[in-house]
Length: 191
Image (cartoon, rainbow, N blue to C red; front, side, top):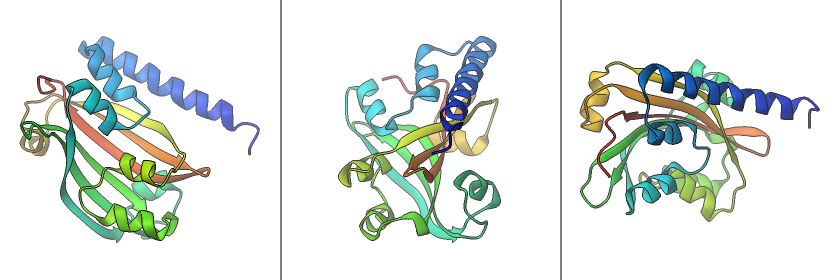
């Protein structure tokens, strides 16, 4: 382990935290928004706690693609590496309301066969798969932001703009396993 690694992790965490605070001051974010942006655990579990009910994953699309350069940089793999690309909605199970839209990239070379098989099943939440295989991991928030408008998100989330987003890596055994970018409306569905 690199002797500077803990300092780098702390600096990254502080930068994300400061950016969330800055967004909060600038746009008047609610505590729930700040929690959703800064949470470093399972989003599925957090949404279930917030909504006092089960949530489900609805896969929009999933395929193996050559890893795009931006994702490759975050995952520390070569651009073009075979990568699972997955676009999903996390929905409230009681009424089907979309809560979060996410796109993830997972390099296939880093997956054990059983994990890969479960990941390729369209509607398995990543956190649940990791728990099933007892994978110890941490989430490292890379960036957060605010979007004034995005027609595609308005359609997917069935909520008006503006939107908040966060991008993070799930890291295990010292390497990024998955990179994820999540979006949600500031008018988060009434829970």
